[in-house]
Amino acid sequence: MKIRLPKIYYLMFASICVGLLSKFSLIIAYLLSIILIILFFEKRLRQILLFLLCGIFLISNFAAIILDKKSYGKKATTYYSITKNFKSYENFDIGDIIIGKKESINQYSINIKPLLTLKIPVVSSIISFRKNLSERLYLKSGEKLTLIQGLILGDKSKINGATKDKFTYLGLNHYLAISGLHIGIIAVVLITLIPKIPLKPKLLIVSIILLFFTILTGFKIPVIRSVIFFAILTITYIMNIKVDFKNFVILIGSIFTLISPPTIFNLSFILSFSAILGIAFIIEEEKHFLFNIFITSIAATIFTLPFVLYFFKMYNFLAVINTIVVFPIIYLHIVCGVFTLLYENIFIRPLIVNENILNQMLDFLIKYETYFFTSNKIPFVIFVAMLLTILISLITRKKILLAIIPILALIPYYTPDKNIYFPNFIRSKAVIDMTSNEIYYQGFYSDYRYKLIPYLLDKNISLKFKQGHIRIYDGKNIFITTNEKSELLTNICINNKGNNCLFEYFTNKNYFKGITYRQDKIYIVYDTDLEKDNIFTLKNKKELIFTGTGALIDENFPKRKGN
Image (cartoon, rainbow, N blue to C red; front, side, top):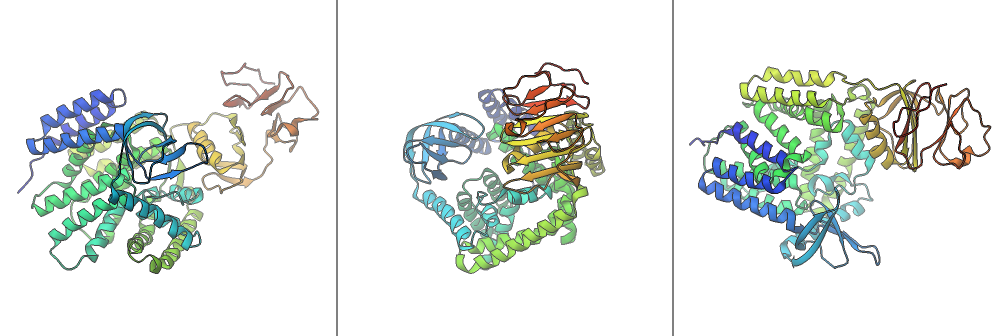
């Protein structure tokens, strides 16, 4: 029989609006979700969805599951839950479910006043097994295994920054975040391992196993969504219900948004949903296996490209090729990882070999892809135009319109101002001179990755420079390229190095002591007691910005005329 879906696009638009409204009023968003569920769905499904909505609302606001904890002597213990962390002097065990009122502190932390603690032995045992297995794989391999924990357990704590940067640079971040792809591979492995029984009961068994697998991954939200998606597909297959896969994806995405409106702001959900929708829309019939892999990669790329460029402002245009090249190694790694759950000691060595091959492959690809990695900040208008193009293509079924997306992505929309920037990263030092396209950075990896790179992207500055010096004490630079490497900048003398510079920049006030003061120069130092019209300090300031002539253009500070 053929399922009769709701007016799918009306449902999609309504669910998106409810999701966006949750940013301003969560209660009103949930009330509208209840109304839409009552309007669009039949009685039995309506009851299930309302039950899920209430459950998710209560769990997200009044419950936390302990996944890990760290104690710091007499200080409060830090507990790690599914979404955010919290501190408490009370003693909880891994796997405990804490019931109480939650109050958000910031993006990463909450306060919770425990009213009740639930202990579910099965959950506690699986989560403890997850933590211990992750640690054992790391230690037994001589600290060589770091990726496999993320691929099958959702534990990325062992993956260092340099490895994460490699995946980002090559457009392969989707491999690191355990999601639908990983669940699909694991499902294939399980289907293969189960004895020869009919496919329908086999799929049902796999669905049940995957439900327990969500606990093993630490209740990762993308895994929960993927397992639910797989389970619903299994039910439709068992009941011989024929569905239009594209409309089915839209329906499931709308349902996820209705039962949890804030989901619309979750980038993981947006990217996963967009990728699956793209695949469902472009691949309508089975063709050659390799052709399907290629088209699948293109489809996922086109549908996620607007979000990647708008939110991350970086992209590798060989990401499609990289995805295909690396896929066999990732597939083999996940398969070995599944067997490791059963035969731990036997598969550690193959995992080490495979992970080593993967790292070498990433290094090789990075070496030859400098010209294909781009930083391009797209305006909101272009972002909306890309989304409308995808929507029109979906409604009209004209796939040729999707060619507009990569074309819009290639256009440079901003020209960086010809200014000289002195950002204040406190412990790390940086100078960006766009009058001569040069950069200087010396400091820590965390400041490089999470302060310098976002700073450059926000200023619409390309990550490719004519000349510069990048020194990271505890990491490696991948993103920023310089044609020539030199600590000597054209217009800026750093710590008394260089000649005939308009600007003198001192990374430490000790370098500033004993200088021969000159009125015709501009001095930049983090902190000094010396007060002169041409001496500027960075302390307690976010940044100093000058034009090439020396005019201070940051409106937070008194303006100075150029020399």
